[in-house]
Image 1 (cartoon, rainbow, N blue to C red):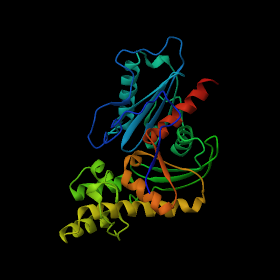
Image 2 (image 1 turned 180 degrees about the vertical axis):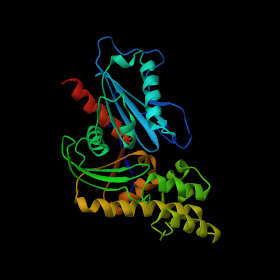
Image 3 (image 1 turned 90 degrees about the vertical axis):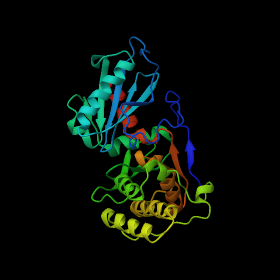
Length: 309
């Protein structure tokens, strides 16, 4: 099986090859994944709205003027609230606008409670559902894996949340789990994610080595032990991806979804996890180029509605 990449319905956010990969791990400053040219102003009289997803690992921001949409990202750092404020200032400067030009700012994510400049705040479940259906009309199941939790969201045609499940009590099955394992393996998370069993020469003939520990701390010790035993690092990586996928697949099975699946959140960049999810779920798992921004896109769509009254 292979991942199915869809281009999405919003042509105002064109794909930029490599523009979304590894921004968090590289510690980039404010990085526009798709931004207007310097000093390019939004049209006069256009109603500008913003959506901000203040996550545990990265702050993502979307500006929208009704005709186009641009996205930015920056690592959350020690203060997601301060990071979000600076990112908003930088994004508005790129559009040649000021805060008073923005009709509504909607925020979501763990850090939304620390964003005093918001006009409204919405749960990440609602925003990811809305953003996912915008990116992939007809999606019925959204699998969102972020830095601190994993969620499965059953959605209706308009992006309404019908049901959801989530794991926010343990790091296993999250981006944090993968980051810890990457450190134990002596590599970057992006390097791990690019290795997919059966795809490409580096993974030819490689099969996942089972990872038995469910706890992140014990799994790290297990990985170190396997390395010391001489187990192929690629097999360990495949086993880690399989471990995450099995945990998430078991969680979302409670929702009983049978339709199209869209993978969102920062871990959606990880092709290895996506491929493992396909195998565990037994169905295609789609990844849009803007999947990591689904929460912020959902927030900006809600902001647009609120600005319109």
